[in-house]
Picture 1 (cartoon, one colour):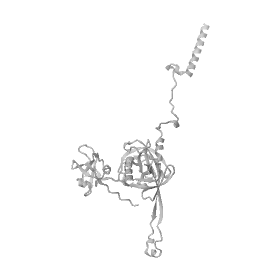
Picture 2 (cartoon, one colour):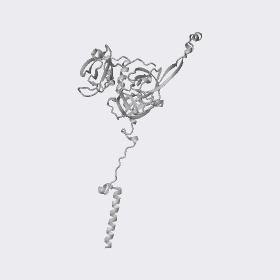
Picture 3 (cartoon, rainbow, N blue to C red):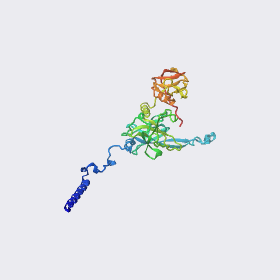
Picture 4 (cartoon, rainbow, N blue to C red):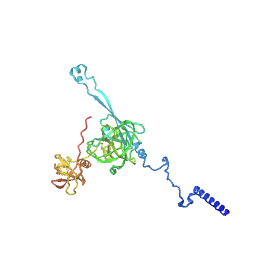
Length: 384
């Protein structure tokens, strides 16, 4: 009996020892019911990761920042002379030897390199009435710039510097933006140097802000501050989707409401300025107002919208086509008119000299009129 117990004990000890060895060095040989260690997938080191990460926009910033510049402008301002200096008796003895007191006003902004040939896109208000414009590249090099042309209606301007080998930014599709898309703002806020902030698209097609004549802004909560004007608003791929233009603020700093001109508009303006030095827009010679709710019902579609024609310029394109005050403009070339701002943008996009089809409602009935588009008069220059 003792002998059998000894054999059993030795066999059990050997089995336990074998099981221990297998579980330690070869667990894959054991049945599934005996357990298997959990395998954790370890990410590659960040420095060695070839693909873009969702938690970083470094690649987008790296692509775009070489194309964003700082713009410094200065202009001479003169303090008015004291009326005493205009006294005839004083001038009889001293002549006009007392000069005005000249001072220089310095302002700053940002810009975006859009061509390797040296063209730079910025805001018109950044360079307005400037005597001298300097552009600081990300490399630290400073260049003198000249104005190629401006468009006050969209607050855009094109500069040019005498340089080669500049890195032009890649234009993205601002028309395919969606509310909630991630965007990055790059510029020179408060003159501290190139800075990147992030946010999302808060709204699209913002108008009625009375910032520009033509408004179709991208609204973003990416921090935009004084000095960011004219800088780039880019998407997560580093492509340009807007030019930062204005902010809503009660303190002068960012409050999470910024506005950018869409890249599609900026590109159209830029190309015309480079080609002709100015921007040409369509015009039909009407004054429009919002449509009251009870007037905004479109009989056929049941939708509301349109623009009430409050005035028609005598002998203008609309007058010659038969448009009358009190008409409600519903569509232009089959594109719906949502409000007066929408009408303004649709008309401006028309080619002067071309024909456009207007869908109007008059006295409860719809009618179509053909108008020969005119050339929009130039905006009067603002006083410096």
